[in-house]
Amino acid sequence: MTALSGLDIEALSLWRGERMLFCDLALSVGAGEALKLEGPNGSGKTSLLRAIAGFLEPRAGTIRVRTNNGEQFAGGEERAEFVGWLGHQDGAKSQLTPLEALSFYARYYGSTACVEEVLQLVGLSRLGDLPAQYLSAGQKRRLALARLSLSARPLWLLDEPLASLDASGKALVAELVAQHCKDGGLAVIATHEPLGFEGPRLTLGNGQT
Amino acid sequence: MNAFFALLIRDIRLATRAGGSAMLAVVFFAAVAALVPLGVGADLKLLGRIAGGVLWVAAVLAALLSLDRIFQSDFEDGSLDLVVLGPLPLEAVVLAKMCAHWLTTGLPLTVLSPVLALLFNLPAGGYDALIASLALGTPAISAIGAIGAGLTLTVRRGGLILPLLILPLISPAVIFGAGAILASLDGLANGAFPLLGAFSFVAVLLSPFAAAAAVRLNLQG
Image (tube, each protein chain N blue to C red):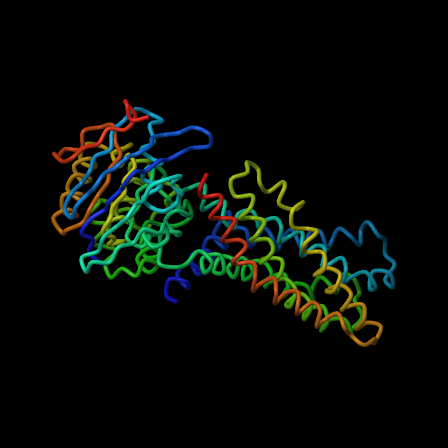
């Protein structure tokens, strides 16, 4: 993966329809940091993540990623190739088995990671051949985590990663994020729950709008 | 290139699995084509004349059935986000999905069409033109359909307005395709094939850009 040295957001304003979510937001995440996004429902956490990923065009402001060799990318589709995405939907296809789904993503993202090992890591190795329609919500979440970790992208954007996971699943998220940061990755995590590790946090909503 | 084929193969796999659209399209095509002689009656001469037109209309309707799923099923379960974040430009993603749609609907329909033409007593001179016109024209259905699927991506029950959007755009393919079969039955000079080919070519060439723009717009929402 191309390592990133930072993510910088300046004077960002996001709107949903006619409603302003926030304006003049500034934040900066450096390599090895995991920023926790907090805020009440509807404060714009998911929209901010979607804007960073390049799905949403901000009304004003810049979102920029810096690579280690000094390049900067501010365009939405240029940023997209650095993003590892875990949305609130898992993207699991009910007809495909976890092995098939992960093999597809490994090939699609050009990853060299071993699919069986990643499945083992998230605790799904016994379910590799079961079509995803038989997986529980938590197991689908684990499958999404497996996909995230094999995508080998430097900037992780996680939207409620702990949803429907059990205690060991939550520990797994903390462990994956910690390992990702140790390897020089960045993460922005929107969640209402304690993540199990300390780090910078940003609260959206109160007084920002 | 690797990513392109990975996506293509995944979409073909999804379409051919249980609950996929490939089998549905083929069965629907056969059902419509089998129903028409029952309605029209056993006038073999008449059936032979209308075979080309009926099969073309049935093929368009069968392909329409699965068109709205090109992007929508991926959009609903969040996979579209993941695919968009991948290394392929969105235009190439659209092209891969279009190809997968054609390989799982247009191609099997083309292969099946001569069998159904037997039901219609299509004269021997019409088979080559039937197969050639469907092979040449069905890519345009997948291509133009992809634009409609992109536009109706966030519309609830988008499959319902999709036909309204794209049937007028597809009608040249039906006119030229069915016309080519009739012309070859009558032994006339066949100007419909070049026109059908040109229509299909332009549709396949331009629609990845149009459909990608439509998907981009809808992902904003």
